[in-house]
Image 1: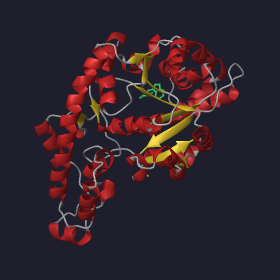
Image 2 (image 1 turned 60 degrees about the vertical axis):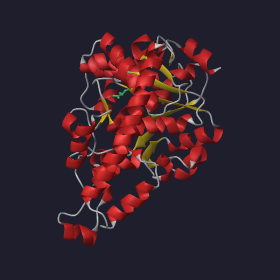
Image 3 (image 1 turned 90 degrees about the vertical axis):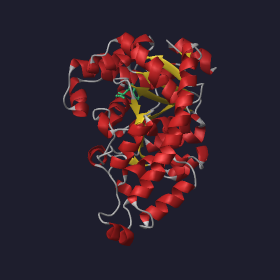
Length: 360
Ligand code: TRP
């Protein structure tokens, strides 16, 4: 457990993922086989959602940077997983939030989303039926966001976020509306895979659902995913340190350099490594491959590495080989999906009425 998780679990309680329950969606998915999901907010609701198959999966992306890195991989995989049984799935572009908290103009967000984020999400395996929208253009959010402002006090906001500003309050009312708005059609559970740093929004959203008299919504479910560490071994890969992240795609020579400089869980000396083997939990290459390498070779190589039968350099060579192939395939798909977006083939909505058309 890392620090952020520890804090949240201690202060606000979270429950472990019930893998038996999720196996019912697809027990062969690597997220399930390798236990790459960590916690859930709303385990009772998750059980109900899966038993009744009455749920949608939704997540949001804030394109504050022109590149996507491996840190985002887990969330996309999780959306893909729930998509297998969801009634429908939505990925929204948080352009209101990007403008308020990162000062990125709307046109810029749109350009980045069309060119990079949406094609990347589709290239990594999201269904072509995924529904997209931009916060600033979805007019059905307004009614809910307004009702959130009416029901949540400044103290509620402060409890959840600590440091509070008009920008953050406004973004947060939109985020809550994002999570809930499909229920303007009918009651259906929202499953929201996100980084655990988004848990405050889920808590606030659940508080709001319990409080409001204007709408009768089902409680949303937060699904949190194991992180991929930064190349120097910190908790989470992040765009604020580009030299410590692997981007999608990444140039082959840069990729090689980054992999070979990545923090390793191998022994300090060869002798020590042969004797004690590698600590896979803190090994950056292992933590990336866990999400990316679906082959049986992954188990064979990491077992050998764990036992000290192969050295960190050899494991890195293998990692490079896997990621090199991954990037080649990814680049091809990215090109395909850029074109797909340009031709207007994605499903993009602007209101609840349009959502209704696509799901019924
Ligand atoms: N706040 C999220 C981020 O920083 C983006 C986001 C906006 C979002 N609305 C959402 C995520 C709804 C999940 C659900 O990345």
